[in-house]
Length: 71
Image 1 (cartoon, one colour):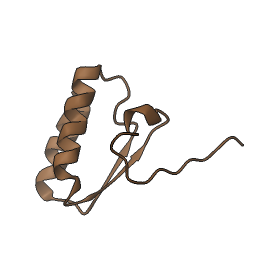
Image 2: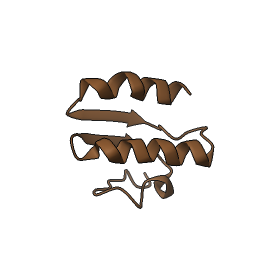
Image 3: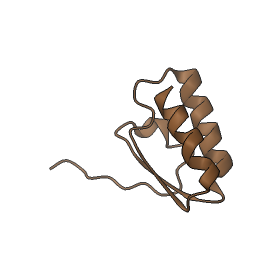
Image 4: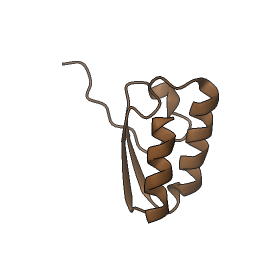
């Protein structure tokens, strides 16, 4: 609920860059899908940078992926 509230507050300002750190952590699959749907609706108007270790959550929608690798 906190992530949905944060997005609801940020998106009306139409930022050019939206940075999200682990935005899907702790969300049930239904809420995660809803959140991703809302992000995709806005993606054409902004750059969305998502930091996550769960690549399965974003692999279907990401246009660019970068990884730190094993160090």
